[in-house]
Amino acid sequence: MRQDHLISAHQLTREDVEAVLDRASEIAADPAAFRTRRAGEVLALCFFEPSTRTKMSFDTAMKRLGGDTVDMGTVESSSITKGETLADTVRVIEGYADAIVLRHPSEGAAKMAAEFVDVPLVNAGDGAGQHPTQTLLDLFTIRENHGLDDITIGVMGDLKYGRTVHSLAHALTNFDARQHFVSPESLRLPRSVRYDLHEAGAQVREHTDLEEILPELDVLYVTRIQRERFPDENEYRAVAGQYRIDAETLEAASDELTVMHPLPRVDEIAPEVDETAHARYFEQAHNGIPVRMALLDTLL
Amino acid sequence: MSDHQLRVSKIRNGTVIDHVTGGQALNVLAILGIDGSAGESVSVGVNVPSDRLGRKDIVKVEERELSQSEVDVLSLIAPEATINIIREYEVAEKLRVERPDLVTGVLSCPNHNCITNANEPVESKFEVVDDGVRCTYCGTIIRKRIAEHLDAS
Ligand SMILES: [Zn+2]
Image (cartoon, rainbow over all chains, first blue to last red; front, side):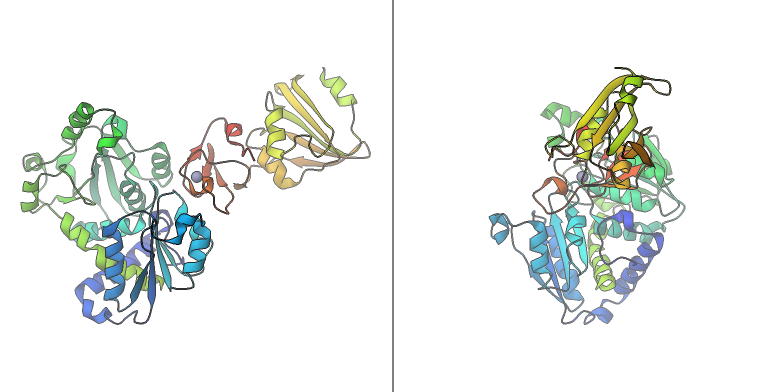
């Protein structure tokens, strides 16, 4: 990668993505060959909001490369509560570690933090903003199943607030992918994201109904519609119910359809779907390890 | 006040910002951080009849010469503006308003959850795009009424 940091999926060129995914494939094929690759190196885990799963995934990835990690701990237990700025915190921590992984509740936090440090910094989520390693593992999963060119992908659920969706959509503009977005009217893609996709020359279509496009999809990426986006329980139930899939929904789909989900799911994918050949969401989560290993190995 | 009268009330040294979009004069002052507190003498004409614009505003600031980067920021709210630097009652320099690529520290991001609105040592930074400006930190786009987002500080 030309950059020292990974802040946003926007910065990734097709070559960047392919370089990381190629290495992830090598790692997945022969993890033992990478066991001492980053021995003696330390990764700092700075999570300003809880995200146990993402943190575990980075922790595991670094350890499987033979490296070690230091964890800032929770915000409540650290000195950050005493009013220290993020800019100061990362400048202190860069002295402890060879790279930093940052998760922070404010949008743009990782971009700003990266301006203050010389060690590589990886954005593990900034508020409702970017989460580029999720994007890389999503791309890896799509590539393993269908390749990344000449594919048709449908993204369904909360497209307004779902940052994984925004990053993925943008990254796919580097490839020959037809993108369909399925959501209730109130949770459509935000204007800034549509603007970006349009600027990037993406082929984007928006729908309120999955039925009309399901048969042509290679990939269906489902996201959760959250209760708190709706003023009352009834409205939420009514809307969420329309964007739930089960085995019956998938009867209209191609046999080759891959169903993905960033997890955790609640009930937007019925458990019976797990038993079908379409389900790839656990594989997708597992792919976070080789992909984050590949990314750390590239940046370090 | 007519265009003619304003033209004759010449200043000795300073800057004349002419052909400002009608009603934007006070925002021009805000963008430039001119509030009179530095003791500079400022005259403002609002909604003056103009051949070119129908109505225009004029701002004259004495004893202050605007830089090209200050002028570029004006393009966001007054794209037609012309700027004359005056020395000893004569036009010493004419500056053209050009749309800048980046606007730093002038606007504040409307996204309350943006890191530039937290207590961090960072200035706001907006990229100028086709139909507005876009926060380089959080991606929020301001399309309309850019002047409402002028940094209050
Ligand atoms: Zn912002």
